[in-house]
Length: 297
Image 1 (spheres, rainbow, N blue to C red):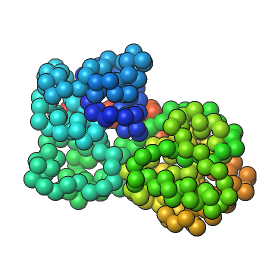
Image 2 (cartoon, rainbow, N blue to C red; image 1 turned 180 degrees about the vertical axis):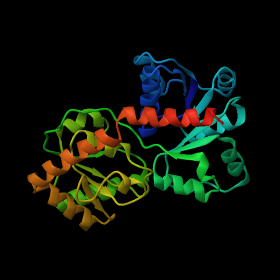
Image 3 (tube, rainbow, N blue to C red; image 1 turned 120 degrees about the horizontal axis):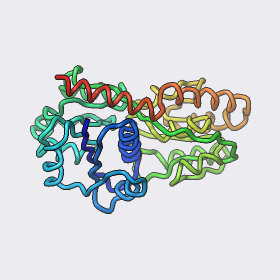
Image 4 (cartoon, rainbow, N blue to C red; image 1 turned 135 degrees about the horizontal axis):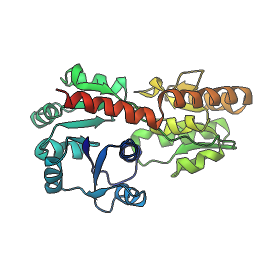
């Protein structure tokens, strides 16, 4: 198969890492891939650094490259729009966010254009169905993460984000209430090695790839009970789920912080869960299955 991937993200967030991992994994599996990314964006730079085929994303280039492709895979909302307008081949669209799909005339038209949707979780799939997308055009394909070395640290870690829906203020307040120092990370893959507990709070969440990274490193998680997060964090087994209340978050943090046996048990269970369900190999193979399904129509 020849697949053109497109992502218009300006920053390197979870969706861009997933696009990168997928392109890399598909290429390793023998598929012909091309990534179209925003010029000078971190995704373009990282793809070049890894030796992946990448070109600047423009409407003209997407139109041109799609003519020689079997499929187009759009990884974010702007790429979805471009693909709906100019792609000459069937389009698969990744949907990562948990908020409702817009219902205006333009949005309804755009959502009829994709051959198939890859929902990051059952929660996201339900939102697509509420917007009128037939269940037969939706596949649930969760994120995959690379294997990480087992963490053995002393920090309470949380991802740094300027997104107001990520509840960073609540995280900071809960850490103070628990009597713990909170470190916000811009480089989770490296910083997780020094973590004892990972805190992930959000008002809305499609799934939470940062949580999967923490689980891959064996770091027990305290996370919001919202969106798709309960699909990856099993309360009391691979982490603790909490409502977004400062007292409840603080209590969960202290419970994990003060109980090394619980941390060890949850960390080991989390690492097993990632290996069994959320590896990069799972991501690539699930996506290839959808591609084959679309091309067989």
